[in-house]
Image (spheres, rainbow, N blue to C red):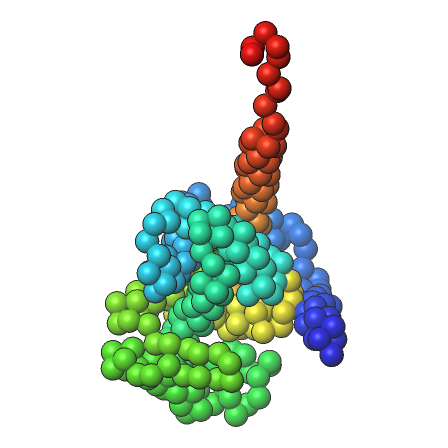
Length: 337
């Protein structure tokens, strides 16, 4: 049964990619590469610079996730630089490979054990980082659905009509915000931990909780900003619309378990942005994948290689020192006596 569970999610992810790519092909039939290239070259250089800055904001917030989790654990001896590089590598790999909890756990385990953290501490760190991301999605999703419940009409082709109804959407938004309020109250009142089978979830201190409520939305705002800044400015796309569509697309990509959300992310985004020409939307999504996924992925591979090379060299030096210390001294000669 365990082996079946190990294979079922990759199979689901592959199926999601195949189906989404087929639907995406139907959506983009008749679209020429020249049109997409014209949209890419039409983006002003300053808008590319703003998209790059948004990328830095997003990954800085992701590094803050790790820092917050370490503070929750009472770990303060690890430098910001090491935490930032570890977080960047973790998310750059997991965003592209998929199964972010597991791939992120492997990278963090290799990095943080070198700084003295135990496996149990790293498990808590991974769980808290994942929860922080989920908290940000719930918070922003609740705000968007409460303020602009009509936005779900953009997904009427993908969602049941009951969910796209503004009254239902606002109700869902209020429920999401209610969850955040309960989490805040639980942290402030120091409520006892929630026990689910063998897992024990403790409320963090209010100072940690407050940092989560800032860092998580900041990361998502930065990521959505990449797309917002490279969409045609003359069409005046609203940031809240771009943010809402981004949250829906990114959440669908994560739920699908497709590697990098390939096809799923693009399909939802294109479907939800019918008021902007498809070449312009596709160009913005290409830039997003380049800035947020592909360039960080290439950089993270270099970081992993350099880290593992340094660890291997350190292991060989330690082995050489042990071998040299275990060699017995030469026997005394008769002249020495």
